[in-house]
Image (tube, rainbow, N blue to C red; front, side, top):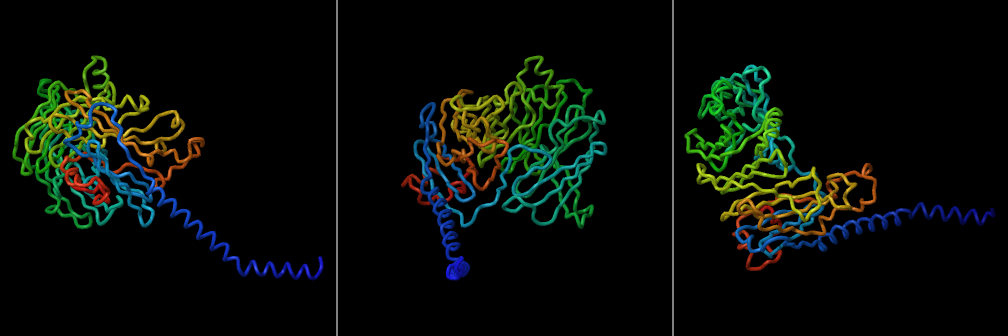
Length: 467
């Protein structure tokens, strides 16, 4: 190579090294612009529509559906009332982390009102330790741990006697006050009660601080009592300022209502309902073709009422929904047997609706559910990648009289993965849309925005209060 060529080459290399930051900077600017424009474009192109599949939209007049459809970059709040639908998309300043959501069912770790409770049972000594930890906005623990230990005069008929329900079904709260009872089975004997739980910080426990007293007590008949007298405790719940003790006895569900001080307010009875808590009971119910339901129920609350949802042993999708008004706890507002699955949607035998909210209004039961799409395009996808369908159904006298779906292109979450090997797919929550804070609310919420069905004033519809 000639010396001139070498010199030119060296000069070129020197120039590239000296000014390499320019193409790198341009590439970085272009990348940032592309990402931002894509995020904003998704917000601008967001669409929602209503599809009425059965019945008349006028059935929705007493209620309003609110919620959010979110991913890591957007939050699209919406209000749905009859044929009217409004929404507003907000773009986050930075990608949102994974979010904590409240479950309506219970296990040994039960969360409500920004707190997590875990219960440790020593059945041999009839001793129950409840541990409380506070959570901050994202569901992480915050602050110190508190606990309480309660000893009850209860004996099990055998060392291996089962509780009728998971132990956490005996825990509930009214505002900051926590209450507990033991969900005993018919094999337990002694005296049970509803205890107002007194917590103490774990680093300074004293007897005086951690003593919990019963606000009411009741005797357990035990397994040797006549069958019609034997009872089991399905759970303890709260609605408004009242406590509800769910008792199953003689194929009846008895819901006893108490004031926060333990005063008995009355009871309501659901006849001809058999609750199943053990494999032996399940086998017997199947053999006798009994109309039976699993004991572990889900709870849905609002300011006016509380609903208990039991699943059938024959078809988990079949539900028995028992609703009680806060102001009349000794009277059943509604007892409805429903089948919330939609014939219009793809789903397999193993899939059932996930109930999001329930409200009973003017003799009709409104049920808001989500379904995982099981259509041909999704057959090879894992659950987190299957599209979620949001469906509203209305029931009257156990029959479905309306069904509608909220259609959104933003929820068509194939994410260019349909042709991918499902085993290689990684789910990233920040990039996948999901429904959050879904609620059925009074129609008055829609009336507040009726003057102009536009996005004005509902930057975040799911946070609107009135439940």
